[in-house]
Length: 273
Image 1 (cartoon, rainbow, N blue to C red):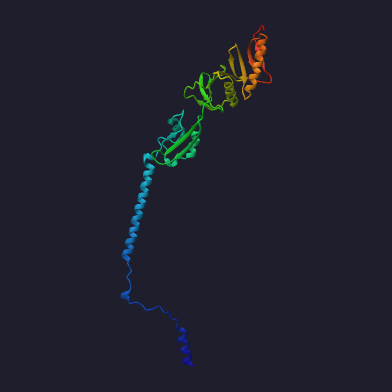
Image 2 (image 1 turned 90 degrees about the horizontal axis):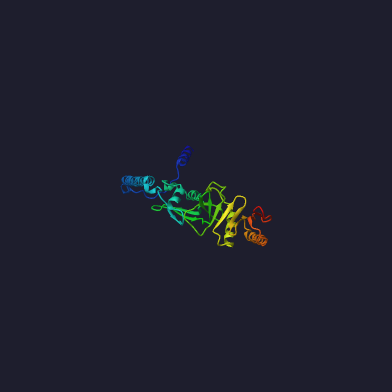
């Protein structure tokens, strides 16, 4: 009984075996190539170091080379303005191209009342910044306090850049003794009214402007007429002609006829009439 228990113990201490196939002799096993692995690791480190040095050199060149700083711009669409004016408006002189924001440049350029729209693109040398602008067109010449400026159809004040004899001229009343500021806008209805009068009377080259009476001119028959402003100039012309015909038929020569308020036109004559 004792021998059986010892035999059972021996069996319980045994573990199941796993067949792993024939084991090759030690001399037939492939040796571990430690030298080749170390050489490959050194090679990759060397290659990575070259890449890092190259990128660092490129960044250093990019941020320090003068060629990447903006000293001029390429401008298209110019008619009246100069390239130097547009460059000054852009506010990017001597700025690194990396920091140039096309939207901010466009916003700066549109500060000029002469420019209606602008397109800005940023690239690489030599023309890193390219700007295409659309200039506003003058509708008439406004003379105030001895200074002539251009006015567009929306009443924006622009610098007069050349003589345009075909444009209608508006001369303000002498009581206005200060030139127009670039930040001031003329009432668009005054501009529209002036252009309507020019269409109705193509021979008119100069109109007058009074702060209260609006647009007018000196009639060649010896009196002044005022039409106010707005888009109803054709109606005012009809009323004006009717008043003139009525006065002349009665041998009345007015000094001034005022139709600035079409609902209440009036005229004045010299004393004694």
